[in-house]
Length: 296
Image 1 (cartoon, rainbow, N blue to C red):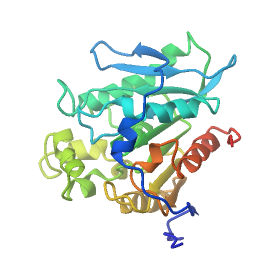
Image 2 (image 1 turned 120 degrees about the horizontal axis):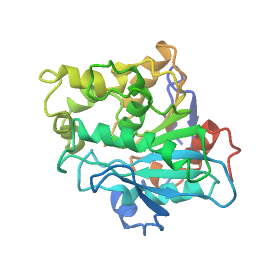
Image 3 (image 1 turned 45 degrees about the vertical axis):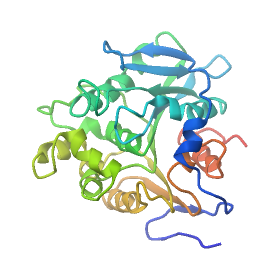
Image 4 (image 1 turned 135 degrees about the vertical axis):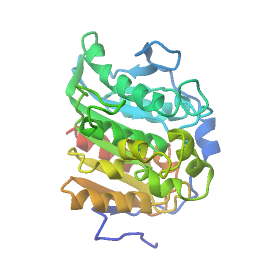
């Protein structure tokens, strides 16, 4: 089996059994599990999250889940619900966020960013009602959600004059980016449906809106200062592995703890499918960041 490893950039590389890649249709057809408790974190209809608690008394470590879908309104949090539920079976609480997206009133700049920031910070209020361990919060995101997850960890560095500045952002223990878009400038400059979404997200090109890219592009916000784990399928054609490779190299050069794992038979959607060969690696990565023993 051919392995896709570049040891100068990759901390770990796992060989997966040869199998067909998981498709979007397979993910979309999965029956969503019960949402747990649906909780509003803001005033507009899309400002909500699904809170799932494991069995036991807690306090529970928390995984904040950010769904992908090119930041576009037609893709909501339903398709990532099986991932959130599977993590819950490993003994952690999950807080899966919905938010305004391209096509929603107020979506894109700045609403999309304001929403996920408010959703993350809402854990402080939730922790007064349910047993959550805010010392162990990890953010995980897929594709465009991977971009937002990395941005959430970095937003404390934004200047006070930024409309996205938060005076007291909730600190996170780490970030797991699954096929994440880590460089908006580099991604938006390529052809493709999701690539074209970058300019819609920020209402313009990098040349037209340089200040917006500077405030939302994870690559330009390095060093981020928290452990980052990037998991990417080597066969991904939606967000090519070079996105994570370049980001991991740049982050490590700036002193960040950034580790990249390329899965040599995985594509874009394998990483969020609990039935896939890639899933045990994703679960292991999340639980390791939380300091928990992986569940077999």
